[in-house]
Length: 201
Image 1 (cartoon, rainbow, N blue to C red):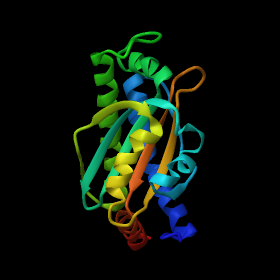
Image 2: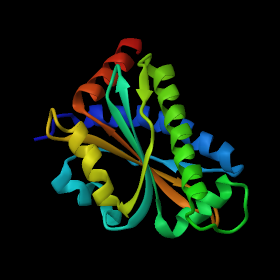
Image 3: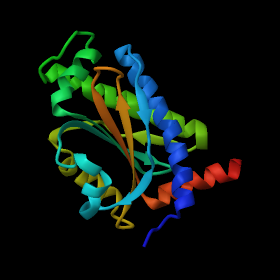
């Protein structure tokens, strides 16, 4: 049974979409190119349903950066890009043309981008709701998306058994690399965000 109504999920999606645009703008500044973002919606998820929640990309091999946030709410964020496009993203971040190998420096550039994007997201959340959250140090992994998402989902779902998962699709127009920013919230955090928004409306 759903723990959040469709109306509340839609309202939460609007808030997260607004915050995620701050992340997209941060990435755009880092690579000096426009970045389009789209958040189709928010859905409940748990480990057995991650394949459904991530649609057709659960088995895709990706390079991903994960950060968790603690404070007024508990939140996780994972920036992932297909392994075949990670070298192109790293090249843009390093100010180089084409594609680079996933060296330690390239991985570091992607990790730092994840740090900056998470900071921008949390700053957007603070401006919208007044909630303050501190981000952890970023960790990077290369594996299938479903495998990399399992641990943060299990961690954040520990109290309610499910999480609220939002997938933000990021794309550099034309021939640029694509990426996904996954936002993971527990139900208590989602209710707190909605309460702050409702109190201001």
